Length: 261
Length: 193
Ligand SMILES: Nc1ncnc2c1ncn2[C@@H]1O[C@H](COP(=O)(O)OP(=O)(O)OP(=O)(O)O)[C@@H](O)[C@H]1O
Ligand SMILES: [Mg+2]
Image (cartoon, rainbow over all chains, first blue to last red; front, side, top):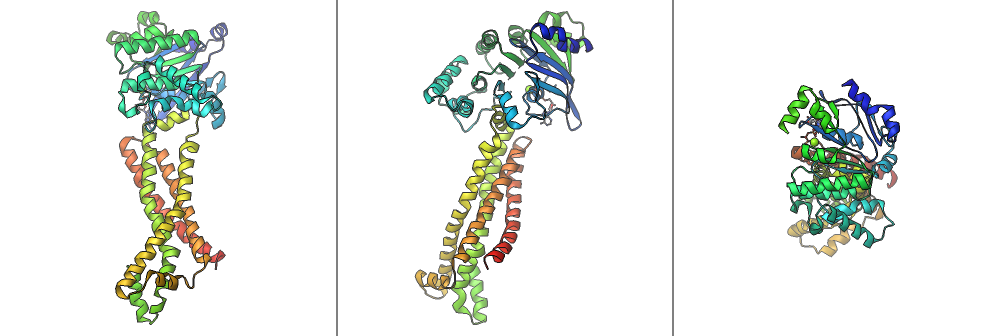
């Protein structure tokens, strides 16, 4: 446990590949008497994808929400590009959030807007100078990237959960973020669509050098897209490393988890 | 209803001719504004409360925030402004309905044309009787909008939470509309004697 946290925040490693874009340190979060996160430390650098695995209810979604500041931690810190987000004024936090793309576990599309308007929403609010036609082109291009260009005029309630997820991903990418936080991007997708999303995340990571954290239950997808994997259990990081390291581990929970995946 | 009862008591005191004035006075001063306030609390308060609450529990408000847009400015400000602007207008409509109803009840007992009724009713009234009570409802609008948005946006816990938000919006905004009315009537009497 200790050694893992040391690896994540090792200064030598940080110097080697530049300072981490996302740095989470000793994060604690409880809801009432339920201690959900119990000292989580993670760091993700530019061009790196970290897959976060763990059983249902271990706090993976809560972790992502803490990173983008939708929840406040009981203790510990989140740093984005070196800047601690705790205590920032809303507009300062906004500047940071513009560089972050967030995909909610249940997509969280605006149900009163069409698919097209959903993806256009961030552009509408933050690219006020962009000409209308350019915005429309960008929306089309984003939707094409997730394979949803045919659903432009549909309402979110009229498309399937997996399709909503893909629209959510397109919306998350609208402002060309350099950080991606994806909560189960391939859950509920057929294998072909899932592979397409994996390819997209890989492309974003390699071509745009995004720093990403991807929560997933899909070990295959995690293996494909992630440089490193972190396995959470009972609010702690049980192990962090590449897939081989996980396979070699003799921690009981890791073996159990891999056996069933 | 009010006018029938008033008629009974006024007739007893031999002041029947004051009835149109009494009806106009009560409708414009109090009944119109407060009934509008309470009806809007019920309808619009519940509507806004439930709408924002369901956006909250489906994480749409979080999504707005995650897109670096201020959900309060985007969702609450427009709704509160709409409430503030709409209430005085709705009050005007309610006043008209109230007066016509007052005339109809009056007409049932004693034939008098609407024109006569209005003339008699407004003979002793001036703008100070009319404007402050109408525009005080803008404050009701502010209260209803604020409470409904607040209750909606801080909702937690699924569909049950949406129901709770709608109910508490109605209850709290009705309550505060009545409280505000007491204060405002005092102020209006103070400043527009
Ligand atoms: N707002 C909240 N209030 C109270 N408890 C919460 C809240 N948000 C999350 N929790 C609790 O925190 C725990 C972790 O939730 P979280 O959604 O992060 O799990 P998860 O790891 O994402 O699970 P899954 O894989 O099923 O999505 C759960 O037990 C949940 O009940
Ligand atoms: Mg989750």
